[in-house]
Image (tube, rainbow, N blue to C red; front, side):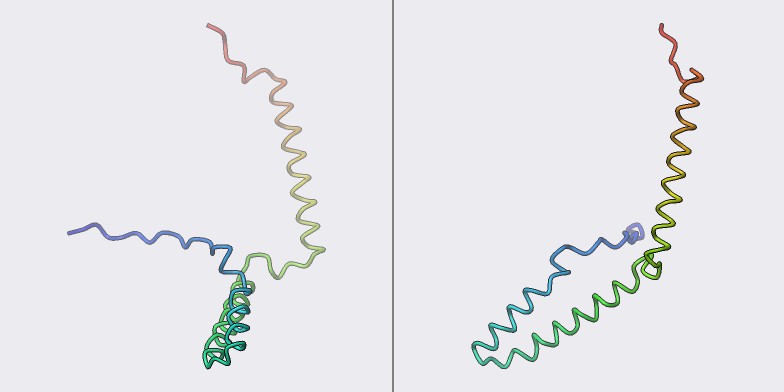
Length: 101
């Protein structure tokens, strides 16, 4: 029997998937031609807006205020500064020198 297929993590959406311009262009072309396809393309645009709203609302950190983001950034910078100081301190102890042969 073939091995069970493993599901790979979903790939990030391509840049083109975030562009509404091709659909707007298609709508304009349909209107120029007095085509009946305009309703279909308008529905596609509406669906794309709904998909993007859903994607945005599911993004991590979307509910974090700018003030909270600034506080998190400040905390992370402080952690980096502290860790860099510790790293320099450990380096100065000469524990990581490789003996020459």
